[in-house]
Length: 254
Ligand SMILES: C[S@@+](CC[C@H](N)C(=O)[O-])C[C@H]1O[C@@H](n2cnc3c(N)ncnc32)[C@H](O)[C@@H]1O
Image 1 (cartoon, rainbow, N blue to C red):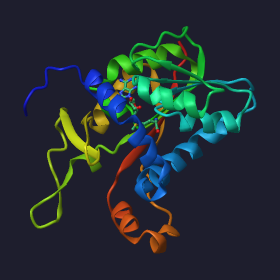
Image 2: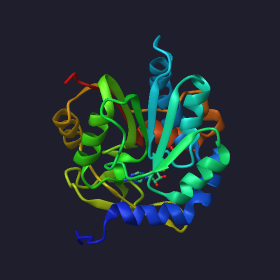
Image 3: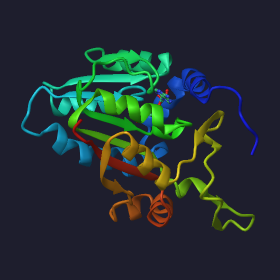
Image 4: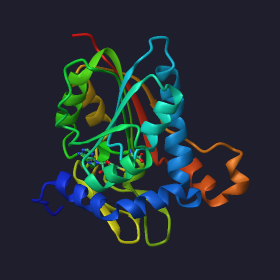
């Protein structure tokens, strides 16, 4: 596979800067965001809600790769006493976040360059950002440092198998090279071409372990039956093939 010399962090930062508003508009339109809504947002919220609502109040929660800030806003709505901070690499995505949720704190930084104090956060959550990372180590290390002992790290990624399922010339899905550890191009919508990195389950779990996390659960979301009638194509494909994968890990005590 052709090697890319440019920093993938910067490439995606530029792309998200350029397409920030179109991305936001897409996410506001349910029909264009069925996968996000039903296979990512809802299952993420299901994991996060009991953690946010745990007895201890004034939780500190980091939304890593917060984009235009919807998850940060939802967390803050669930617990108005929580201190929620959203960070993202793209200044244009953050402009939208600030425009929409001016009462929340948003900061620009890369996920491996978190400047918060050690053991500052109770929860770090990250929606659909981790697959942009070439190397998981530096970001997992940074998250591990800023999390308290027993703090929760909940993140969603492109499913490692879903990523390598490709249509052959007859339209049938075939699994292409699961074990590659390289970048791949994909299209969010016409014009918005992104590059992400394929990480196998083994690589992800190894990187978590190495950075003092214990894995609690892996969720491979499937659509609820009730969606079959309303969105038959979406239902059929997403009940057969994986799209996203959610991981929930806990910071082991120092
Ligand atoms: C698919 S969007 C998800 C945004 C938001 N979490 C959501 O669910 O709506 C991915 C976001 O990750 C950000 N991102 C990508 N790589 C990043 C990195 N290395 N550090 C921080 N943010 C990054 C992008 O700028 C973009 O806003």
